[in-house]
View 1 (cartoon, rainbow, N blue to C red):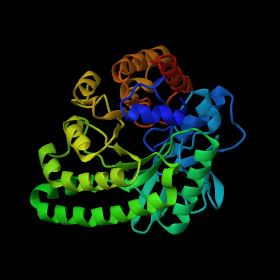
View 2: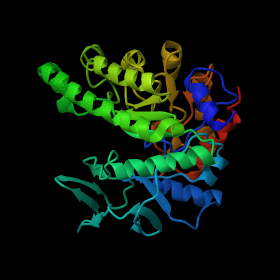
View 3: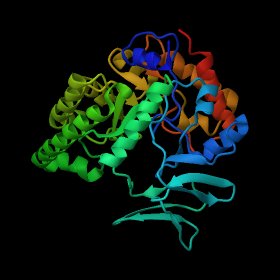
View 4: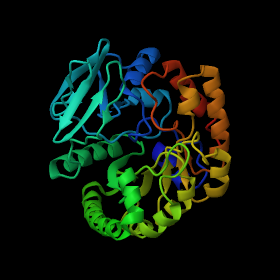
Length: 375
């Protein structure tokens, strides 16, 4: 199978020739630019060009084709070249390529700070990502930016057989404590906001379909619904209040395109999975196996016939960055043995590989995933 065929088969719950592998297609299936810089040096590839940053909050990297091929990955990031760029050096030994409009400034504490309107975020001295407001500077849906994404999607489609996806669709619900409280105190206001957001997203989806056609295979949306120990809100209330609007959005996408729908939602989200499937979500990420109720055996047994799990292949919280390479391989083997059978699975670790993860552990995880990938 080609990579594109392999991923599509897995999402359709068919058994492909081998388990698909992802490193960096989505902003929550990737690798920190700091860890990626170390990984490139460890592998001895692509050391001449500074790492290109994909996500300016999490500081994740654009993974190059040479590395994708090294780990037999089947997906690639959809992220067009910058019109104007420069080299940002967050600290000694690290040089990253970023767009000219991303301008962190160092304060008196040695922290990197970004201001945009009334929002701000900071990276502590020696840190690996920004904290604070989640600042999105790029207007994904303006004609110029959308055209650049479409041009890059066409290049990927014609020049490679990689599976790729467009991020940025709204899942129609918020992910703040205030929002979850308003679901109880002002359900009418939440419903009106869902109506407004649905109309906006339907118009955006029409733009996407016209601009991209068959050149992408999936659209991605996100909204965290779980803490480490429990859901943020009552799943039944979520299904009653948000579900009908999310179902209309997913229904429109499926009725008017062949696009698959990917939802990123962290934490203890098992009680929502049936709702996601009913609404039309095809794949769930990051599959946080260390959260309450997210036991892989339970997830696969209860939901594996209707939900593709995209992630959960290495425990980033307890193993990937803190254990040795042998234990990483053992962890990957244990998790993949649960998620892989029968299709409906795409391998990547839980969320992103963090900045201080040793490169030998990253290589161990992906090499082990490929070693046991065949059906």
